[in-house]
Amino acid sequence: MFPPSKSERAPLLCYVTDRRSLVSPETFEERQPFDTRKILLEKIAAAAAAGVDWIQIREKDLSGIESSSLAREAVRLAGSSSPGTAAMARLSSKTERAREQLSTRILVNDRLDVALAVQAGGVHLGEKSLPAREARRLVKSLHREKDFLVGVSCHSLEAAKAAESSGADYLFFGPVFATPSKVAHGAPQGLECVAEVCRAVSVPVLAIGGITLENAADCLSAGASGIAAIRLFQDSPDLAAIIRALRGIST
Image 1 (cartoon, helix red, strand yellow):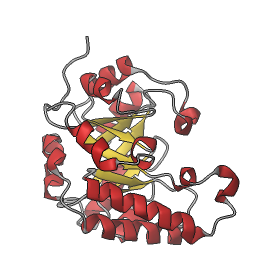
Image 2 (tube, rainbow, N blue to C red; image 1 turned 180 degrees about the horizontal axis):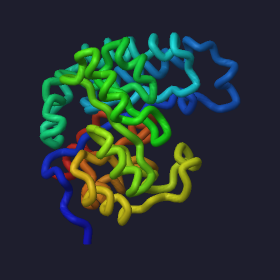
Image 3 (cartoon, helix red, strand yellow; image 1 turned 60 degrees about the vertical axis):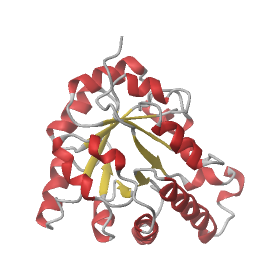
Image 4 (cartoon, one colour; image 1 turned 90 degrees about the vertical axis):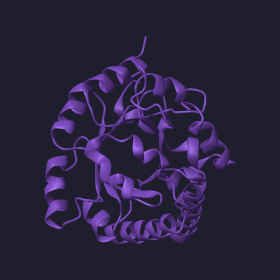
């Protein structure tokens, strides 16, 4: 039997972007850069308006200039959306500062320089990226520690413990279920592993990898504080309905 979720309220919801999946693989390279960018920005605006808590800009193939431009526009769009921070109150005391965020929080994948330059709400690091401790040191040197989150993707219990010790504010753990975007990270971890990680760390854990409206509740029952997903949010024809359904899972 899984332990109860660390949160008795609605889950944290994070939309992870992937503009390459917005168009067919056969036509992606043929499209003009502004075309896929425009489509992605429309998705980001819709997600922010629907009330998703976080949006992670995860476009690894972009240059620094392109990444900065996209992230800056995402921050603008998120800042003009309705407040989406009701779920932030469920974070641990270590991340109480997140409550001050008055709109959807933009996280930039891996590029700490870009995240800081565009005044994003945080950076999301991979297991082999800059250690969270070093990212936190740089953030502090720029006096941004009050409003900036440092998250880490983890694929094992050991990595989760190490990330927490290194100063991560939250963790992504997965892939929980089978999903095309996480094939490189091996076989699905499963709900038992989610539960084990959630018992072992005190920072919020968001389940990722193959998350659907049907299995999200299982992730929360396993102890996750929320869920992160690409297709669940990006491919939905009625994102507001998806958000409402997810919000109602644990209320």
